[in-house]
Image 1: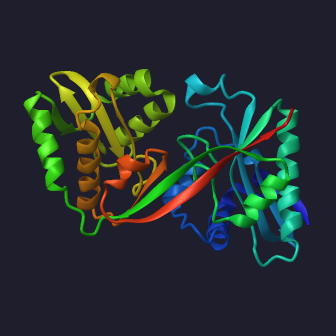
Image 2 (image 1 turned 120 degrees about the horizontal axis):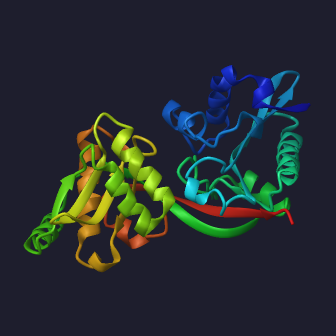
Image 3 (image 1 turned 60 degrees about the vertical axis):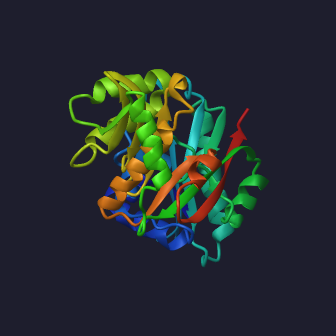
Length: 313
């Protein structure tokens, strides 16, 4: 068995890795858009940090690693001592499965030590991630990582929602009327305002949501964002189909405008747009706001993730 980097394996063979992930990750369906988003579309992606395990030239393991070197610029210094494993997968039928996993981890960790990293985190690489942590359903990987010294430092969930019969409930229409009576209006975002809105988001919610807001304005044929406004003042925003066409978020309301139902209206307006686009099963990722999202009808799956950290020093 040998472990090589993607640079040596061949960047032109990325499709092999994409198919391999879908063969090994039985809780997930990684489509081409999502795979591209976490690899070549990520400005921080480095083929030298993706490691491939081969047995007789057959692919039996993959580790996609990353360090934050380019975007968002505001977070580079904060994360200069941190590395991430975006995804780790080994062939469940390979006889040397355990060895492949151990070698992939060891190779990545040693490289990160030489780069001065002090910690390795699993999966929660904001804005260009496949998962926000390790799904507890992947018990094999969880046990292996814990034995290697990873510890739980956080947790979150994803909601998966079936939009087939989605309608905005009457109570949400009433909330909307109440907001309108307070001169709060809701509208879709339009091109040309993305810099002003993303600056507003950055000032209140940080650099990652700023990046994702810009994606919502630019990634699709038209902007995929709703705004709540009082006059020219932005009070809240809600993105969808930004990181992935079937993903909702981020969403946020200015502190001074909370408890008025603005977030609920923005949420349902965005989900309605996703339904009108023809989306069926959509994902509300990386959240701890359990009650806010449990108001959405027809939640069909909840995924529970642990965020894991390995201290290198």
